[in-house]
Image 1 (spheres, protein in one colour):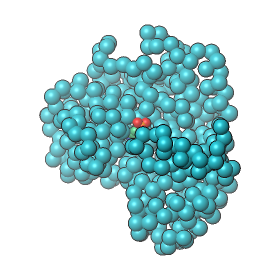
Image 2: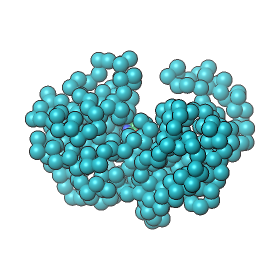
Image 3: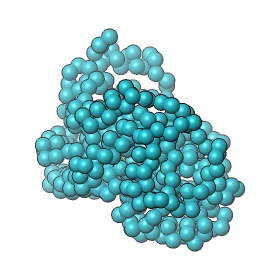
Image 4: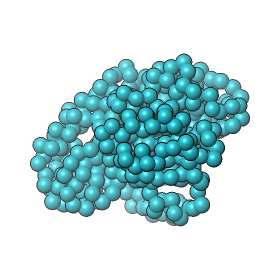
Length: 394
Ligand SMILES: *Cc1c(COP(=O)(O)O)cnc(C)c1O
């Protein structure tokens, strides 16, 4: 039943739950950094499924790994270990530097990784507070939603998980909020959903010092920033600190749903058998996919490419000289284009017409999170299309 994009749109709205807005279009196929819709129109994908498609679309390494695994053994339950699961845990402990004293819990999504983190925080002081940041995003399930620093998302679903306190992202607010009554601080190293907003200089370092002093866990939500996206494997590595735990998802599976909580040192001993679990988490299909993605990122130097292409993109966007561009935020290939006027929706709509996918996390920000494989030709095409999209709104 291959229909037109218009027909799919109407079938979508007749069947999908009312939480979703109408889809932008219907995509049927992808290859590298390009996707095609049901009418045969081609797009350059500079959103990458929101920082998920690290290897782009239909990457042969991922296709081969997933095909081989599903034809071998796809699921077994957590009564059993599987080789891809153990291999992925070892790989994450190596790449994060958590090493022999670190441990990994596998989940199926970002929000589930954060649910595990909330339970980890409770194990570090059951009746203590968890501190999270205003304007942060941590997911849609009740624990992760309780952490999320956007009242508009939280309020319709209150009461949420209690004992979560939100503070501004300033060192002064951190110092005022920390105490013996805090079990954990949860931080996005760069606030992706808020519009790719960087933390103030020295914030993570100070959070590390204060959490250590007061026996609280420093938990970093690297669901969007992790797996090479920002030009280092994990954003905390740029700050020269070691957290107690990080959560991962998005880019780590390259499009196959997978998430993880990785703990460092003493935090690795907080859960005891039976305290947390999941049916699908860590299944051989998802972990084989993540091994293939992370292995390819390593083998092809895509962390370095993210740093290099990120710098190249920033320079090229600046060189457009558009009066609409106020500032560039983020690191590597997670880029927030801050606009001088609240026209982000118009810019992304025009871009889509022109055959370019980017997104507007808020009315004055454009987010770019292209596949980590982009090169000169993708950047050149992006600049041509983005220049036209900006001109239409200037
Ligand atoms: C996307 C995201 C989540 C939620 O992940 P899901 O897989 O959508 O549940 C949580 N935290 C951050 C920082 C994210 O970007």
